[in-house]
Image (cartoon, rainbow, N blue to C red; front, top):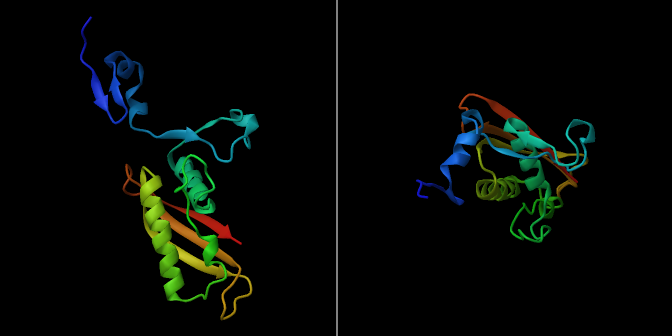
Length: 155
C-alpha cells in the first residue's frame, strides 16, 4: 500500500495522523505544567499547559536551573547564582543579560525577549547583594501584540 508521507523535523508522519489532529491544535505548543504534581485537582500530576502559561513556566524553569543540574541536558539552564555576590555594576548586569539571552535562544521555542531587567533587592553594598530580581518582558512568536512578563527572584 503506497501513500504520500509528510516530512517534519521528527521524521515522516503518515497523512492519516495529520487528518486526526484538528487544525486548531497543529500550530499550538503543548507541554507539562511546572512544577509537576502541584495541580492535582486540575488534571493530575502530569496536566497539560499551553500558550502564555507554558512559556512562563518554561522560562522560570530555565532561569532557576543551574547548568549541570539536569542529567540528560547538562547545558540546560543559566548560571545566575554565580552573580549573586558580584559587584552590582553595569558589567555584571550586562553579563547576566547575555547569559539569559543565550540560554533563552537555545532552549525556549515560541517566544522572544523584548526587555530584560535586573533589579537588586535587599541590603546592597559595594561588594554586591545576595538577592536579585530578574524581570523579562516576552512576546509570543505567533501573536505580535501580546506582551507578558515573567519575574524570578534569585537568592
